[in-house]
Image (tube, rainbow, N blue to C red; front, side, top):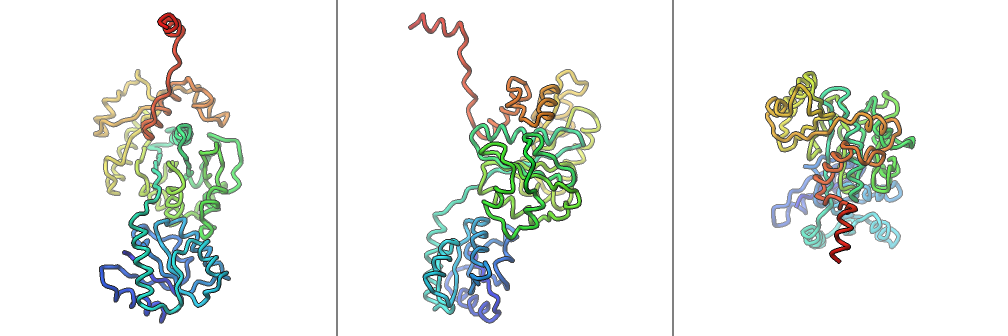
Length: 389
């Protein structure tokens, strides 16, 4: 197992780590000086299986911090070493998700037995892992925000829990595409209070479009874009993966450390372009950047928005230009899209018979594996079925 020891006391830190390293086996043991607040932005490869916390201070909210860490990293187990073995402390520790509470200076045998119990439990645990989809525009005006917000709604209509995070930090307006509710909090608010991050705080910071579709809005003031750091994206996406079936990231167009960190988390990236030469040129540049970032071809699915079969540029031309045969198209139905954007109502709800709605619903079914809706039988079919009866 990967074990980390956390303590403010350097002497205790070294002693507990020494005991752990003396155990038979191949455990990896790390030492971390400080309080639980330091661990909120842990990188994926640094998350331990077991965190041994030396004498947390309940009066300073450190058990609450452990509870938040448990929400962020549900497979991480906690062992608390404390001199306070009162019923009140033990109950508070249990509520925080602590599995084992041992005396401040535990014997090697007691520590080993606690680790063995945790190892057995970890072997049978599995956590939820939502799928992350990132939409990025090859060129301004591609319609990537429209597609991201409306696909998220279509996914939620299949019964999945969906979160959309607006990553266009300076001029994001994704929530307006599907709701007329003013956001009470934004991504920058969550980032500046990242120490509070847990499922309830994240949910309360989002606009609820439907009971199972929520949007975390971009900062309302471009000046707050700098509040959001790459490590904040790590923490938010990790938590969202465990609370939602799909997390849709509307990345916008800029490539910077924050947006690249978001793309790193994506299971699939959907660059959005239209069938004109400027989009094709910028799309090829974007794919070159993705290659330099070591994103494999299986991680990229290009989306051709406002596809027109009568365009001078054919799909075959795009396939040759991008060296791919997996292009997804969204038909050009401007009236339905404009009506949806102007009213702030998802197009599949406002204009369900639009070919654009059909394409979005098909993409949602492809992602979820949902069966297409059954068509109502026509008049002649009903008449013949009655005669046969």
